[in-house]
Length: 427
Ligand SMILES: [Mn+2]
Image 1 (tube, rainbow, N blue to C red):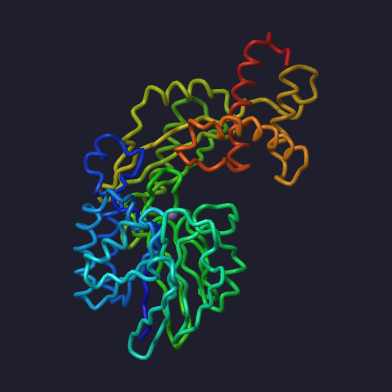
Image 2 (image 1 turned 90 degrees about the vertical axis):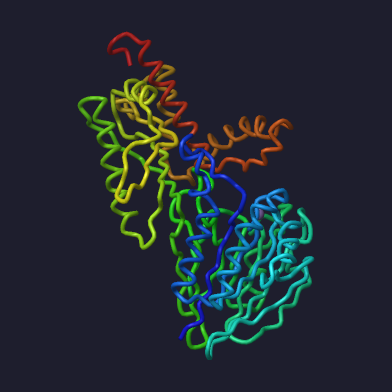
């Protein structure tokens, strides 16, 4: 019989998923952290899990104490009654509130309180595993939690449980280098903080568990806890279980060759049907699905599609199997005009110059001319990003891909406008 650990990344109890349609917002608990926790408890008790472990940021904020208390009290009680241990480390969001909750919840094991490494041994039949954990002692931690730490191995496979900022040396949230973790003498690391899940494998699981359910349209793709099975004294399997009640999906709808603007709508519906088939096949499918749709390809209907999208109500684009709700969180049109950018780029005109730049964006990311274009755009964007008035948002700087996307979008829009101004055939 394997020892089974269910590892949960950033849960953020108390947070309401952003960008929900108004009617779903009224019932937000059904689509957020409380509901995924409920699904996790059901799964854990039915599947005879031995321990549920949480990698910090269990609670969104200090003032979410009572909401988290209500959710966790029920959860911990049911898990303990089923013989399942509950262990956690605190992250930068719940530095204060999680230790306080742990004091109130009997059987809730906070590991590494006050920023001191601590280990716990898990047992199931003949199998053992050792967890090493460290909790945020205060909200800002600029040194690596591994600095000067020596982790003594315990029985069975040894796993680290840590909320930290991986390979971001300047971070204020416990910066740690991948090499430090790899060289710490353990058999794997289950991490919290970044909401995008990593690719954890049984050979040496090291990475972010990701948000337990998508809290924002950017948190797209499968979300849920990870199942780690220890069998025969080793890590036998590591698998993400997509239990999230709300699923975000980014869809590119290629409209190249459509005969009428309305065809774009049909193509979107076809994608929804496809997605519904895929999500419906899950053991525990989501109840709601938010789409960030982008119409791409080449089309002469860019303007018409944009107008159509403006007028449509997109917060309910069809009900999938079992009443699953599909809504479009945002839709954009990023089609290229039905023109040949290559030959346009040869012409000595403003449109030609713009076409040349747009073609640069299509090149390999390592291309020096493309990199220079991105660098110049980044310098301009930083002026805005670094303004004091935006600092409270703590937004990440855009990635190169995001900048390329913005440039492409703005460039194509401008090119459409430029070509519309020119007399027939002048381009
Ligand atoms: Mn965090």
